[in-house]
Length: 188
Image (cartoon, rainbow, N blue to C red):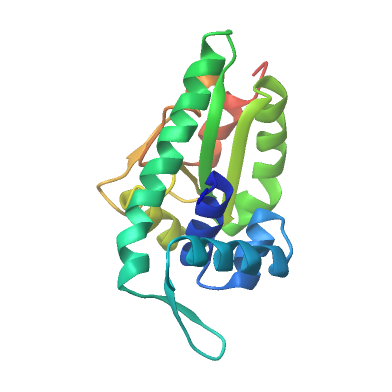
């Protein structure tokens, strides 16, 4: 029995997206590849991880038990990758971003492109949601960074100004507003 990190990533994506179709889009895989990976994982683990309905997947008890273990395993694997690359002087790792619609569609693509140019060993995952849902994901620590065009109404979130280029890898529970975004672009 060999469980792969990719199978665990697919499992997590299906749980978070609550649909194979959306998970496949998020992971840039075909639906059949996602379904096959889930099926193989369930076979390797000796039983189903979801209760399947006509068009929905709901985690069963086994799946709920497995989910935090998968997240911990993926996090540890990301840490190994990051530590090994940092010894070579490279900044590496995964950055999970949530953005409001306007920022996510019009500002974030150029920011992400500039960041990937500066730090090619990083992986950026983006979710575009309304501000309230974005804030909730940050509070629940399900993402590393949130970008919004409006100031947070939630007092538990910190608003940062005047950040420099290497801030992205270490921020948690933070929302940024447009006036602070210019400061993260290289050369600004």
